Length: 284
Image (cartoon, rainbow, N blue to C red):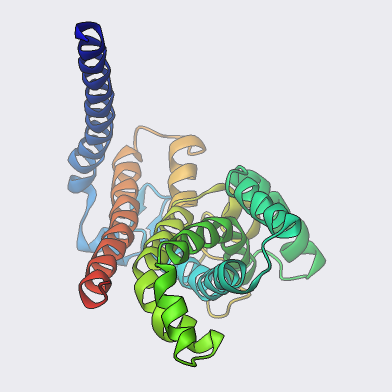
C-alpha cells in the first residue's frame, strides 16, 4: 500500500516536472523572439518592400504572399477534409478497405513536409504545368494538412452521441438531414479546431513552398494565382541561413519571426474562439 502510494507520488512529480520543463522551454523561445523582435517592428517594416537583400526595408510582400497561400490552402483543404471525414464516419461501410484508408491517412499525417514539397514539385509544378505559383503552393500545403483535418474532423463526428442520429432517423429524417441538422452542429467546434490548427501549421512551413511557390525577392506583388510569391517562412529561412551578412540582418530575422509567430498564434486563437462560441450555442 505504502509502496504503491510512493510510486504514484513519484510518477506524478515526474510528469509535473516534464510538463513544467516543456512550458519553460516554449516560454523562453517565445520570450526571446518577442524581446529581440519588437525593436524591429515598425510601420515601415510592416508596409514596405525589402531592400539591400533584406537588410533594410520591410516584409510587406512576404505578409501578402503568406496570406494568399493560407487562403488558398483553406479554400482547398477545408471542404475536402470535412467532406472526407463525413463520408468515412457517416456513409462508408466499416470494413478492411475503410480501415486501410484510415491507416493511409494517419500515415500521411506523419510524412515530413519536404516529401510533400517534392510531391507538389513533381505533380503541380511540372506535371500540371502550374509552375512555381500561389496555386501550386496552396495545393501542396492543402495536401499536407488534409490528413490532419480528416482525422480531427472524424474524431469530432464520432464524439456526437448515436442517440441524436437514431432519434432523428426514427422521426423520419433522411441520412443527410440527420447529419446536417443533428450531427454537424455539435461536431463543428472540434472540426474547425483541428482544421485551423492544421492550417496554422501550413502557414509556418518552409519546405513545401520552397519548391513550389516562394521566391526571396520579387519586384511587385502577385497579380494572379499563377505568380510566385514571397512568404514569411521562406524569407526568414534565407535571412537566417543564406544571407552573406547574418549579423546585419539579425534584427530583420527576429522581426520576421515575430510576425510569423503572431500569425500562427492568431490562427490558434481563432480556433479557440470559434470552438468556444459553437460549444455555447450547441450543447447536448
